Image (cartoon, rainbow, N blue to C red; front, side, top):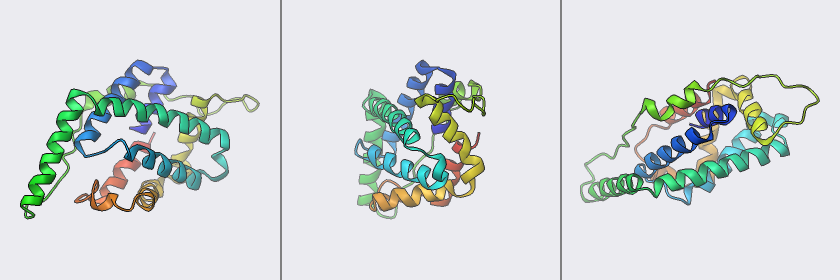
Length: 196
C-alpha cells in the first residue's frame, strides 16, 4: 500500500489517498492492529529505509518520510475508528476468543483483496525518475525519489529486513498480531508492494 500511496502523492490525488488509507485502516483493524502499533511500524520502516538506502536516505528524506507516514498513520487510525473498522475489530476479537476457548481452531487472518481500494493508485503515472541536478526536492518528491530507488538498491531483502526490524522493535508481534502467518509470504507481499 505504501507504493500506492506514493503513486497518489505523486499524482497529487489527495482525495483518493485519504479514501484508500481509510479503507486500509479499516482492514488493519480487522487484523487486530491497534493505534500503538503504528509508531512501531514507522520506526521499523525508517530503520529499514536507512539500512537499505544508505547514503541515499538523507536527513531530509527521513523528515519527508516521517511526515508522510504521520499522515498515513492518522488517516488509517481514522479508518479503524469508523463503524466498519470497529465491526472488523470486533470480529477479530471474537476469533481470538474462540481460539482461546478451543485451541484446536487454527487462527488465520483472511486477506481481503479489493481491486477498487487500489485502483486509483494504479492509475497514477510514475513520476519522472530523474530530477534536475541542482533542484531542491520537496518532501513529497524526496519520498517518491527514495522509494523509486528501493527496487534497484534493495529489492531482494527489503521485506525480510523490514519484518526483522519490526520484530526487534516489538518482540511480541510475532506471537500476537502475526501469529499463524507465514512471514515469508508476508515479506513477499511487502516486496510486491515495493515493486514499481
